[in-house]
Image (cartoon, rainbow over all chains, first blue to last red; front, side, top):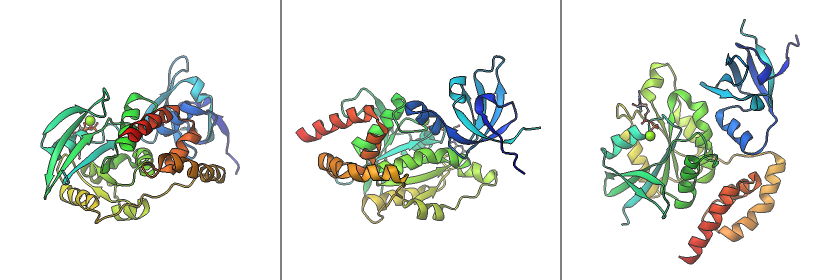
Length: 84
Length: 230
Ligand SMILES: Nc1nc2c(ncn2[C@@H]2O[C@H](COP(=O)(O)OP(=O)(O)O)[C@@H](O)[C@H]2O)c(=O)[nH]1
Ligand SMILES: [Mg+2]
């Protein structure tokens, strides 16, 4: 079975679990995201979307962290579970 | 003076640094400036055997790459003020997150002790931590404590004592990067060493230069001017 679907964190739905594969950001922004736990191989769960879809709260490495769309658009991963 | 040592406490926010600090120093705390900076850091003393340990409570941060004033303060203290030992305090219930900072410290300092705090809480949650295995892998002492219950303190103090007297030698693990980065480090290291000598880790400075960390470069310049004229 080849169910691996690649999605951007910004486009994932509430309850989705995504295994990060790439972070297309540089410099201080990239560093900050890595420090927050958004590293390749990490599982991230979408916990809450605000009404306008920005920011979105994610669960990563036992902490909830909200990202703005300009950040979450640049992080990609494999959809592991849709939470349903 | 020969029996006085500086021990810096680093760690993520909420790992119990201040609790540990207060328990060890018995609240004998005072704040002071360092190196003419405007930043104030809490410090307090612990008497152990014939020695006095000056504990310095650094700001709690998730990283040490100067993304904020707190990170810069903690980083500059560890790198440029060079405490005798840097004690990294980790939350036993959240090691994955906490190890980001621990690994950063292991790259920039030699005398490091990893203190796994909140061990009472971890045990309650059924988390088992093999500190001997971690010690072997990291190349520095790893000690489990509960700052709240005051457990693990004798071993912690004894370990600090053994490090400052040279009875334990720390060999922090080296993190190996991709071939491309390692190649660049190899090219830069001799040049970096020619400028900074053995006062700082030339590998770490080369990495920061590759990172393009300008705040660090500024700090490095100031440090070299200071050292050069003293
Ligand atoms: N159960 C438990 N709680 C602790 C321990 N050490 C600290 N705490 C608690 O963790 C919280 C954060 O502690 P604090 O010392 O302020 O952390 P800091 O931000 O690293 O200085 C406080 O509520 C402490 O009472 C410990 O060893 N066990
Ligand atoms: Mg504190």
